[in-house]
Image 1: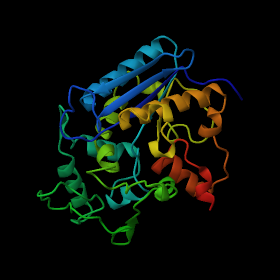
Image 2 (image 1 turned 90 degrees about the horizontal axis):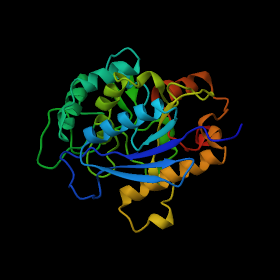
Image 3 (image 1 turned 180 degrees about the vertical axis):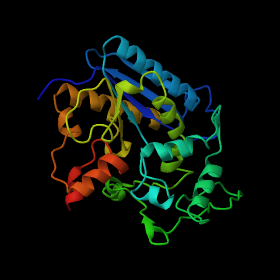
Image 4 (image 1 turned 60 degrees about the vertical axis):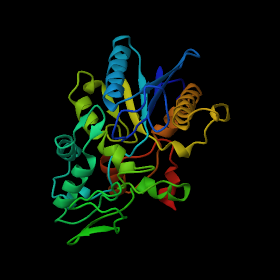
Length: 304
């Protein structure tokens, strides 16, 4: 199987920042880098708010579909949580249930958000405990959110949830952070909490039926689509030397977008998206239906 699957590649560097970023492009902000398969045309986008970025993405995908183009979109946060979290919350498993739970509680007006209050409230559902979410800004207090790391595996009665997903465990030595950390550097779940309301909005949008999220919608089997959304951890890839002098966030999205384009152009994209590993069914179900996977992560880490 060869040839490129996509026409456009969009790499998004997301942020959970609690205020609009400066009008002048800056670090720790939201960036997008759009690369096109059939030309050297590249476009850098800088967004001051998550709402601005979401509106851009929805319109870009809609316009691309209208013109018969296919899109690969990358985001730099955990798409979901370690397995059994739904059991801790006493929610029947279906990702939409937790998506709805978070989306109805999160407020995000002009980038000012209430993620710490929501994390504390969700922790309280875990039988009035302070976890699994952890960390909050100095000099603030929350009933069920602590400023230090929680203890894992987090347990409620005879149920427990791990600190990392299966895919994250293979990246710990490379510096990947706890998935439950919600503020300060590499606040994985802080960014995820601030994405879920927009995922809900995307799910309710005009373009949802033409979007697949890998591997949740596709499994590790081949499938045609118009737009594919994937998760990636930027530090899996070394920043391209030609971007070293740029803002780190911008350099990361440039590196990833260019990398995805080169892989697809070489005809190797299917090797990454449809790895034929003979996982036990229980593990395949956890990865593809509950925890999901990081694009470009080594599948062999689960075999060690």
